[in-house]
Image 1 (cartoon, rainbow, N blue to C red):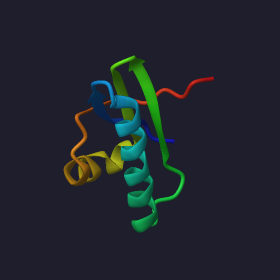
Image 2 (tube, rainbow, N blue to C red):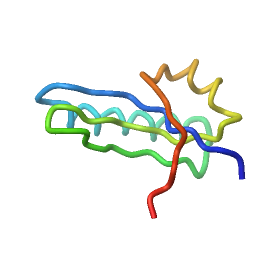
Image 3 (cartoon, helix red, strand yellow):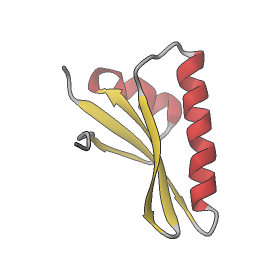
Image 4 (cartoon, one colour):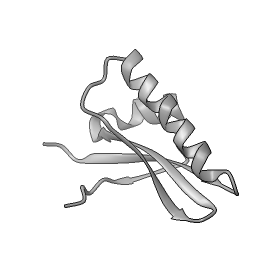
Length: 81
């Protein structure tokens, strides 16, 4: 299994949680439209006024998806156990 990368979009402000949740909907739609199966998406709180939406991709797909989706940042994905 190759390394996985977590593409991250940051949302800040009083509506950050709702905005991140809405962005995740668009990420799921993108996955469906491009027949990409098995990808993980989600929303995580950083604090009350900072939430993230994310998409986990294989490292080999990262450059193409980074250029197409324009995430704010990325990091190596480590699954929570």
